[in-house]
Image (cartoon, rainbow, N blue to C red; front, side, top):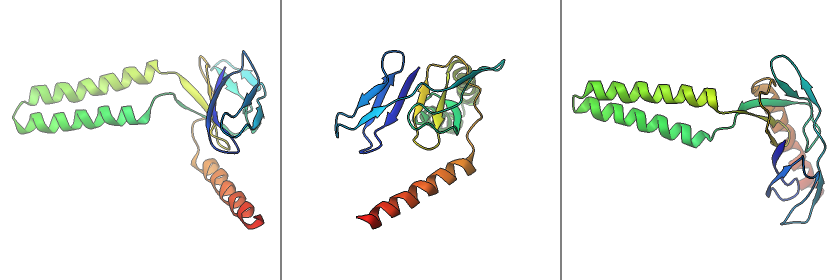
Length: 159
């Protein structure tokens, strides 16, 4: 399993393959981070990651490992091409591009694998054939976001 995460001290990005090693030293601030083997539970629907390898929390969610900017760029291109071709009275081509982009979107959804993400530290757990973790939940995310804000305020008051 491959883990992508940010250093807890300086927010520098890092990546580790857990099959090879479990320690990571930040190249920027020399912070030593010991990664743990995440607890996995195999079910009929797939493999569920029980704990985060970086922070150890049990609140994780599943998402597609696909860059959002690329998906939005394809959608924007298809919509603009549809409008432009409709302006020039080429409805057949306009609908072909719009329906073709929907077909490409569906194929990408079926072929792109899932990644499991931690709510607390945003670490991404790659390499699962089929993740069965629950999808993103806004209330859990907001709770962790508010906790980070409170911790930042407390640390700034201590300084």
